[in-house]
Image (cartoon, rainbow, N blue to C red; front, side, top):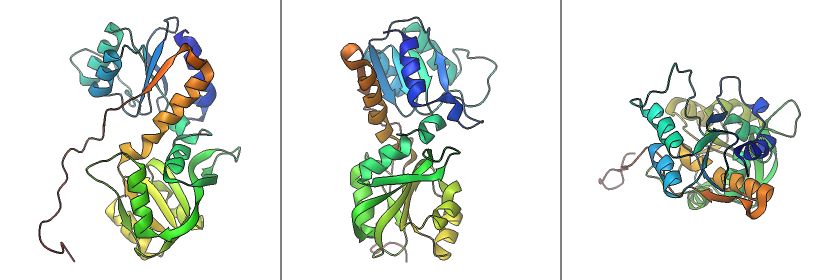
Length: 274
C-alpha cells in the first residue's frame, strides 16, 4: 500500500473539511508515494511515540493531536518539534494528524469514549449542520447508577493517570443519560445543561466554570485526564484502517502514556480538607 492510499481511507473516515477553521490536520511530513506496511496510532506526536514508531518499524504515525497547530516559519532540527519532523523523515516515517475532524466524525473520538464507558449513543451533543454528526455524544447506561459508582466505572474504563477521575455533584445522584466529549469540553457546559442529561464526562474542567455549573443545578460533572479521554479513539481508528486494508497493513496502537502529569499526591491528614 502507498501512503496516498492510507490518506484516502483516513480522509474518508475523518474528512478534513469537517475540521474546525483554527485546526491543522492532514499530512505533516512524508511522501504519498512511499510504501506503508505498518502504522502506529497514538494521541500525541511526541518524542516517546515517534521513538515507538521507529522501534516498531512503522512507516506512518497517525496522531490525534496536531504537531504544528500554530503557524511556523521553519522546522529546524534544534527545535523540539522540528527535531521530531527530522527524526521521522530520516527514519522513513510519515506523520498524519486527524484532530477536530476525528472529533466530529461518525464514529469519532466521543463515540469511542462513550463505548469505553458502556453507553449506547443516541446522538451528538452539538449536532453539525447535517444533524447526524457533530461534537460530543449523548448516550445512556443500561440501568441507572449512583454518581459515585459511575465515576468508578469511568475510571475503570480509561487508562490509569495520576489525575485519576474526579466528579462534582451529589455522590448518590442517579446517572443514566450521559453526555461525553473527548478532550477539553468546558465550552459545552451550557449545551449540557439544556441536553437533559444526568452527567457530563469530559477533560480539563476548570474550577470556576465547574463550580458555577453545579451551583446552578447543572448535571453532575466527571473530569478525566485529557489524554485518557481520547485514548479509546486509537483503537477505533486502528479498526477503521484494518477494515479498509485487511491484512495488507499492520496497524498498532501506541502503548506509551503521553499524559504529561507524572506525579500525584493527596494530603496525608485524616479526612483531608472539609
